[in-house]
Image (cartoon, rainbow, N blue to C red; front, side):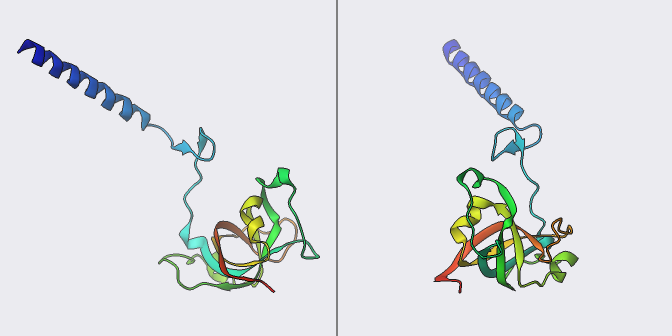
Length: 160
């Protein structure tokens, strides 16, 4: 009987220590991706989010471009544009309801994203969603900025 009672105590102590150790890990600000120890970004503001279809194009004046290998993982707001943009109406409730999102009705958007996320889509028709950036452009560009959150190819036909 004493042996059984001792085994029960060991199990109880081990489970209490495990619970205590796991609960200690959950304190503090959430950190994680992409680099351990860095704060996670704020969740998207759905009121500023829009979904558009259009053609991803190089922003260069001649419509051609490339990204050096060492800049593939660099955030850029001047490498790509979304041309022939049209708004997609099928979005979750509350999406695109801010004044900034409602006023944005451009046919061309500058795209702010990591270069490697958009390079595969250059010349393709896409559906893209993101938040409209209401800050005035520093470079004098007239097209509004779209901070890209999601992009997917639409169809297999390249853009004209």
